[in-house]
Amino acid sequence: MTKSRVLVIEDNEQNMCLVSFILEKNGCEVLQARNGLDGVKMAVENEPDLILLDIQLPVMDGYSVARAIRKEPTLKNTPMVAVTSYAMPGDRDQAMQAGCTGYIEKPIDPETFMSQVEHFTKGEERDNP
Ligand code: MN
Image (tube, rainbow, N blue to C red):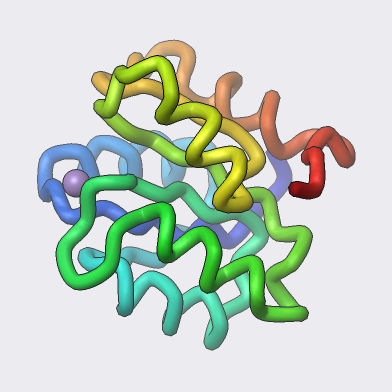
């Protein structure tokens, strides 16, 4: 991945640290939001190249965040990957329907996380709902 600005929306400090560490190690600039509402605000203000989105978030859950972000004309096509421990079969579909480009399950694997993220950010693989 070339030097990208990545917005991480995550309320769990341990996950935030790990994800930020991996991204920065791979040359990304990391922006951090710790609740859903701040996440939407920061996405609008900063127009990141990529958004990593936890689903279980305070103030505003990840599905609502995804829908709000997709309503913004400047963020319509921004790659947005749900990173979540919700391992229920319907959650992937729900995340995709809310506008996410991809879905990564927690716990994340530091060895493969970057390639998983890149898989969802390459090209125009996103299906518009
Ligand atoms: Mn969470």
